[in-house]
Image (cartoon, rainbow over all chains, first blue to last red; front, side, top):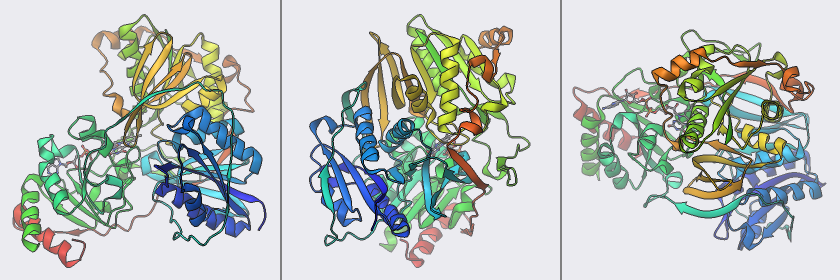
Length: 324
Length: 266
Ligand SMILES: Cc1cc2nc3c(=O)[nH]c(=O)nc-3n(C[C@H](O)[C@H](O)[C@H](O)COP(=O)(O)OP(=O)(O)OC[C@H]3O[C@@H](n4cnc5c(N)ncnc54)[C@H](O)[C@@H]3O)c2cc1C
């Protein structure tokens, strides 16, 4: 094996590697194996614990850890300096980060500092004659576009849940080292306000019951809550219910919200705008309930019912109860 | 306060997906009949953020729109909402840029048009959904940047921003000058008033070329781009939806439950 081909930017929470970071390592491993090169990852945080070892188990050959109290919260200049340092030390051909709250802010900073091209929110990465072809949705998901970077390193942020992580293999070997970098700090972190709703996390739920503008009010979400509870799922929404305050904005699904890929997804009283579908097209079964038989959601759904959700949902709920 | 807002004209992103067409040979989006041009929605929120600051303190809001084929009524909307000046940066040499070359051109224009304390952009444009321009402008100008804001306040020479993250928001502070990109959580942009619309009709936009802003065209548009678009295409969807037909909605609901059970997804 040769030099470092790919550097990924890992994120961790409470000392455990985030799912997206394992997905990035899975994607990186595939590309690196094809290139005959190594995978390195950089982990920035405070109290990163076993995240370094986990990164090796998920496919990294080398791990660079910046573990310091100053990294406890996302600090853009400090984080960018560490990634930039890793890029300088390792000269990777490719740098990958997640399209997450951190990654979508961090990756452009690094790309501009390195004066290199970046493709954001990619859903597929493959090699062609040694260069990485990055596919991403554009125009809200109405079209797809393939890009190549004409500068190095080639950079991409990758959509959550678009890549397969490798099975965790603790017997895999790799080096875990430390990395440090000074930064010109401009951004002062004041506080973090958590607004997560209780119950199963939307992005982890196996059943998602999603309501759209047609739900009409906060109370309108009650049958959706009931259905989600019965099926041990979570309730999500399109943008209008979030903008209108009927549901917490953390529950927005879509291009600029959460990405979900449950086994079962109910799209209720929502039209199926491309920007929304971007967040749920990975669902294995999509059920649409809409009073307009021409709504776009029926073009992506597997099961559809045309009609008023207020009349359909109670009957659906009663039958689910009866079936047990 | 001198506030600059970057506004991009885009085809209406809320137009029905079926109306969306591309010209595969040219790797471009084909203008579809009946699809209007609009200000990219997050950029309208950027105007709103600027006007909220102007509501509270003496400010000048300058708007920059870069692009060719700009529609006057569309790009003038920020003026009708309450912005003070409009600059249209129009030059073929600035078209088809990527994050880097677009940010370079906008930063060059911003420096040219005057003093700036705060620059506000949408979090991403609704056409290419790139989401790099705000950060890029800040990097070009060597100033701070906060992305995906839902609240922007100016206090004592600093901007205090509530930045949306997956499970809530972070409150951060940066010194001026700074760039902030805003998200829909900021709230609805205000409507243009009749007085605003009449005022906007009277105002003249300042039109500038790449040479007028002093941009090096080797670094702008397609020539300055590091990312190359290879292929634009419409993804194919299999689209096989089993419609549940029944006498009435209640029956349909029950039938749906049964179907899902039979298919073992429930
Ligand atoms: C850059 C950008 C990013 C965006 N990001 C996102 C995103 O992340 N997530 C997102 O969701 N949106 C996003 N949007 C907005 C998106 O374009 C749509 O506006 C939004 O998804 C529409 O939500 P909706 O389907 O609930 O509303 P609508 O399109 O108004 O649809 C409402 C539907 O409800 C149906 N209906 C009404 N009443 C009933 C009833 N009683 N019973 C049954 N059906 C009924 C109607 O027939 C209609 O089809 C984004 C937009 C832009 C420009």
